[in-house]
Length: 207
Ligand code: MLT
Image (cartoon, rainbow, N blue to C red; front, side, top):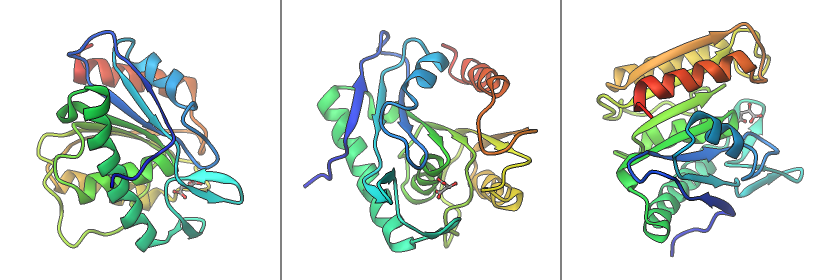
């Protein structure tokens, strides 16, 4: 049986636009990134999920043992569940499964990275805001030509720079077309960065 996620689906105005899969950060929910997804693309359908794990009452997409130390068994299980749910949601809401682009922030970006590193053809693109490498894959996955934007904060106290750089390297070695934007900020997103993300989307998906 397909695992269920609490979620919101917002239909798109244009069937040809990609569907944005939005995944919040720790303590967020399925409503958090909908306005940002809509700002990035006014026409896309949006599938926005709530993480199924609670940490002191705060939703997350997978368990962690401490800051930046992830429960790898749970990460694997939750990544699989996420992939299965998106497959099922495509049939339920009639969107093109081959044109799903993820928009993830922090913990949501980390499970999105895990999905990219685990499951072939799971995503047609990714915007990863404040991500880090979630695990080291045995071999680089095949991500040839998949556009991926990473936006990271030079002063981020939660995500050490080398862990973002390692993720960018891994995705690049896997054949993805990776762009990295370094912000002079911490873990919080900045208005300038959101404009840059929207520009990247326009250039990449042309909507
Ligand atoms: C978070 O607080 O969400 C961390 O920065 C990332 C994570 O634990 O996945």
